[in-house]
Length: 341
Image (tube, rainbow, N blue to C red; front, side, top):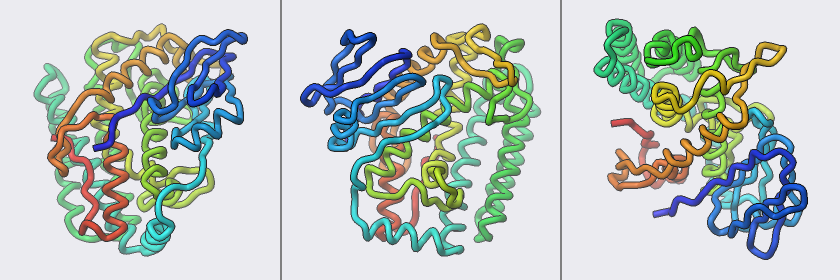
């Protein structure tokens, strides 16, 4: 079983990352603040005005450490990638399958079904635990159940997308009922992004970006091309396969964590800042609180529903990417998505 390694999040503005042997140095104003062995890291994520030396970039590429750059507020900018790993025959198979309408629709249907099932699990759990909004949550869960049944039969890719859109609207229509405290600061009316216009959407978008980074790194590590997906089609600069595979993880990992941070009052409304354009972003302290919570969450263990083995939650992107690669190679008959029990 793959071992869960750390992700280094660098948020201090003006930081400079350099190499010393097989060690990553973090310098601020020419003073070394931290040293980390490269073999302990799975990835490095830099926020805002953070720069890296070319030798360090080469060291990351050599050891398969994903290196990503985001704006200070969490919008993805770029990834530095070393030599492509894996078998070229696997990527050629991925391209052929993505070009086949029936295969793409079948894989997309599996992914969407898992996303809807996991969203329904979240709704039913909330209905059992809440004192209000029970009727609305249950009605939304019933609607998602009906959509799940419609996915049992093959359908064109556009129809799969239509079902996914219908499910997302029903799920987010009652999302506000998940929030039980701090309602003045954390309310949810609709899903919005680019930019997010309220605190909840800002938090969700930030967590989705983190998961997408982890999934993109996992996909590249198993030898697949993160740009070629099945549900999300090709678009320059978009990690379509990563966006595919995070769909089933959103309710379990991102949404659940966002709501936990809010309802346990680990974050507060004062930690969110509104710009002149109306965009909402987290301040530095809140962003650090979220990153720490995300790292802790990844260290928790679950039993994988398909493999039947206990593993750290942070390994889920790697496992799902590996299962997709095994399916595309023909090792297993179908892609087994992650289902929240």
